[in-house]
Length: 169
Image 1 (tube, one colour):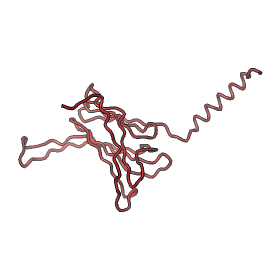
Image 2: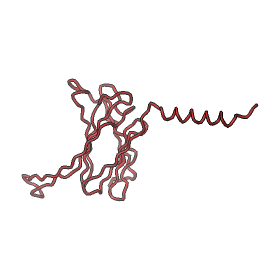
Image 3: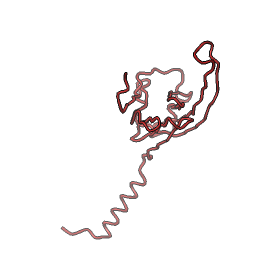
Image 4: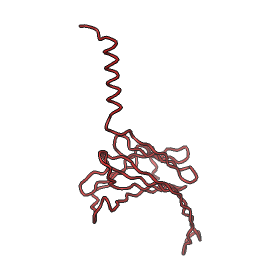
């Protein structure tokens, strides 16, 4: 069998490189989110066309590679998705309690809002809203008027929190 010529090897390598550059799948996106004081840190990504997030508090990793998603109207909104649009805002307000241990409560957080779209289309399926407080994290799925006409039936929430240790008492 004849040995391939250096020119043939070069052409094959060049062809492989060009085909990798023209891949239809967009690269995974990863975002670093922080609370106002920087202690709560979330890494959010759409790697492998699935939404996943990690949570750290200071130097302690609380959970890793935790999937986010919903099954709505018999459609799995956790697979073949990507993050497209993002907005960020910081809120800081105080409200008075009627009767509680403290007369006032500070409501201070950073809010991150992401549009979640199917891998093959630009239509927004839903928005993922994350709020990072100095003391913790809250998340919510928001279905916009574009993605829902009247109402939806949530079949299952596929979000999981993969804790790194047993935090039970």
